[in-house]
Image (cartoon, rainbow, N blue to C red; front, side):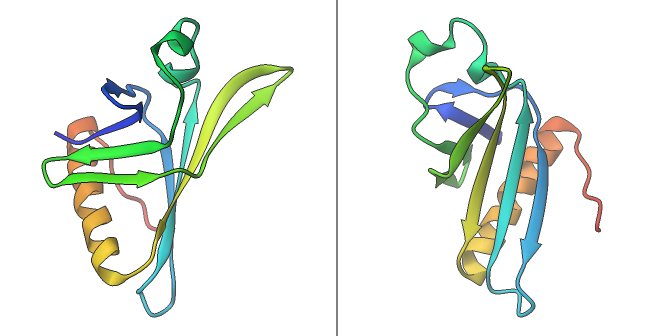
Length: 113
């Protein structure tokens, strides 16, 4: 089971759009996650805790990024954007294993740009 959480223990059910970039030599890259109206910004969630980061959890463990930003329209939260930076080939492979599990759990597909 692969899940994304913003507060430990609370799974995010909204599926993000995800954009991947990779360096020419394949050693580094970024994954940008965009969530539209995620559960975590809905009324009543503030009592559950503060967003400390985005946690990508699966049977291998946890990937964490603290680069998490809220998007507001007319003063109301509308979305969350989070960037996970991949610093070496091992991290890239680990991230792709998480994404494969996450995609399988949520019936997602990969489209190459």
